[in-house]
Length: 308
Length: 251
Image (cartoon, rainbow over all chains, first blue to last red; front, side, top):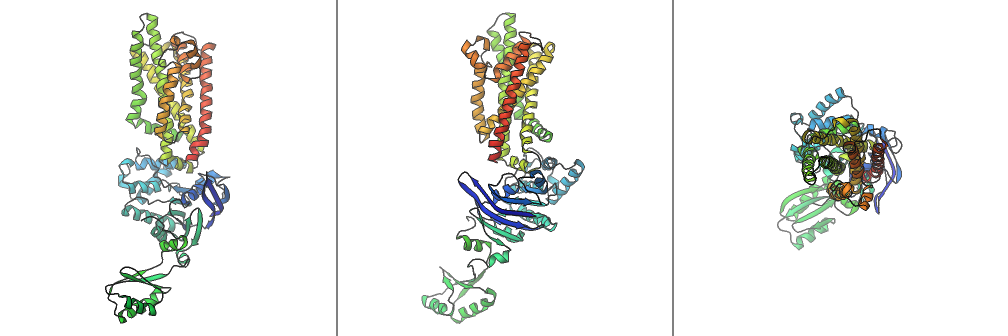
């Protein structure tokens, strides 16, 4: 459905994309995860036919965006990072306008506009001007404008930036519903929990390159990341720590916690607790740190996905 | 393209501030200039010349400000991400520009009609006896000015920059072109420089209609219409090039 091969793009002296390649079959939700400046938006802009690549090939639904941009555009819906709406228009009028831009017949458009407003939970506010909406409501309408023409492929460029948890959950539900309906989705984000929840496969981007891609489980096996049991204590002395270290080599001591690393945390958890009890460690709290995209990203790039 | 124009018209007529600046402000200026120029002349012909100059000078001057604002709206749409989204829609990208130019033409024509009707109703400017010539001239001036705003917008990055540029350029063009000081009182060298401005050809054309009473078919009048159309084609062509080269690349 989407095939990208050796895509390169340079803006002045900045190499935004350094030859990325990926393939997304029909109906898949593919996440592009990476920090700001990784090249996610440039990738989406090329796939949306807004900008042309310097090098590389893109095929979308069988069309080359360079040769058949209009055919490509008919098959794709784009949820831009910016809230691209007319603030002086109502939500209903905004949807009508964008529907007209996609040449949807008037009767069909009216029905679809109502359906879309219902899907987004905004039917009761449909006649209010968009300028009176909250950020989350605007984001929802922004998504709605990309759905009216029933695209086969949906590009969502950080659709949940700066919104409340309620709107975020509603957007997740919408994405999940669209995914179930068989729409191919490319979802860019720098929130790993979104990618973990929504995407079948994830491409991790950094500095214009895809440094790893695969399912969440496949990504978890990458790098040198291990799971850990984190135990908070009240009475750890150097002597006690040395005794524990003789029994469990792969551990690390922090201010008031010990991290016990393991490749099989489920199997080793009880062993660790029994051992600590035997040595008289006064356990205050136990936490299991599983491998997630954040730790995978840290392991692969040596930096955090986003600034906290 | 028509849908884009409809959208722009709906936004424009829904915005009281834009309406006030485009339609009410020129009327205030015409009134002001008409009285000021009238005070400097005592003859009957002098009164007519003052009135014609007030209407002609103000109309082109104010029109240039209006189209600069319309060009600025392209940059607003770019900043808000709307231009990007329009480029994702299955419409040729040039239609976005042509829609804006058509919208600028429509607003310009409405603005000019309002100014001439005001001159007729309040100051007795005889537009009814010169209607065909006036219609030609209104279309020619509107067309000549419409590309101006987009050309300006393509050199700027934000609407604020357009406002800054446009204020300076419109004031200079209007000063040189005869919108503020009547062309016939300018020194010869200034009148020669004035031919490089839209204002000059528009004002001269309006002089021909109301003051010199030149018929529609006269070559003197038609030559001014022709020059204005050429300026229009030139500015629209430059606007298209700059739109493709600068504005689309900034998305």
